[in-house]
Length: 543
Figure 1 (tube, one colour):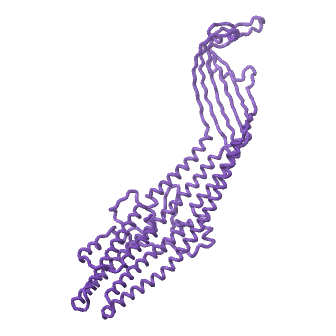
Figure 2 (cartoon, rainbow, N blue to C red):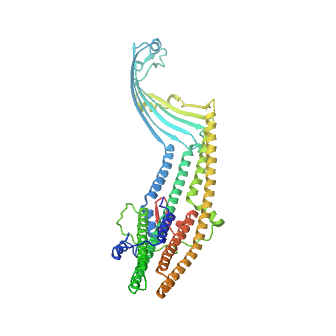
Figure 3 (cartoon, one colour):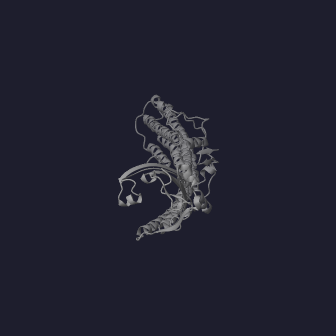
């Protein structure tokens, strides 16, 4: 709960404000306290990464963004999965069967009583192609070849001598028999499942899923950019605030030395030295708090930009965020229109409406009765081997086999289909309401961010006046102390006021920058403003 930047700064203010309490008695030696000032949390200095460099590093290494990119890649693969339904499929089958059974009277008469036991060996080879079309039509082209041997085929053919001039063979001509059949079957739906509305529904949903995933990748990248920039600004704030607290310790040291001199000269009492030492202890406490906050913010920056956390990695912050993003004047209609057309998170929600429209159309299609037109065209042949069976196609003036017909199917109770349509309608309505809700929330966030930014600019003017007045007050009290017209206690209060005012001035700068980043993030053009081109497909950010 303490990770939010504003919360972190507020906690720091409370830590600073705690030193406003009346100074307590006693103090520690200057040598022991100085070691706290010499211990720095991170290695900071000039010549390091600029804000954009940290952003590019985060876009390359951040695991949260990589997870979103992996989801995008999976969405793209799902489109290929749906297209697999329309890929031509090769089907092959080989089967051998053997049976032996006693012939009943009907079988005995049909075979001419050649054997009491009917034994048959059958080798069947099947090969073909199957295809699903976007129109809903299903087609198969297959060939079946059989090798059949049984008592009937083993019986020698009989010759009809009734007509000596045209003697013909009666009975089976081949042993074993080879029979081949080639058939084209086509089924075209006329109601349910007709056309691309039904057959391409899954593909369309997958494509919408790709668009939505790409938008979520962009939204995640924009949020990551904002987090890195604000955290970078907080690191800069923490670094400068640490210097402010160190200077407060130095002021307290100067006052201790001055008061000790005055005590020795008989111009002050020992209580003045004690009060100055107490103020130094408070200033040292503020140094520790500022140093811990700086380390936390540096660790936060590393967690956003590293693949592996290395607490000992030297971090050099040499740049600042001043002038990085142009100022922003109010929300306005143009800003609202821009947010509604460019904010990736909002557009991802809009994509859900498209998906529900596709599902509604599909559910309506599935509620229709099933009426299919079916047709087939085939050739067959018989021979002494496989080759002769194919050569027999169309011989003796035989035409191809063909058929055409229709199949109608409808459930006697259609409550399930109608219920599914109602569910799809409600899902679409719910998606539309979610879009409207997201629109309102987006515009409210935009207005709030604009107000916060404007207020931060206004506060910046006042806090600068507070710093200037606090510095003048300290100089005045120091002069009056030299003249003996004020007390050391008043000088200590002025030192506290100046330290706190300088901290607030730095914090207001971070608040203003954070509000400005939030404005561009809500508008959806933060990366564009920074001249960053986010390629969500290849996950590359280029300057």
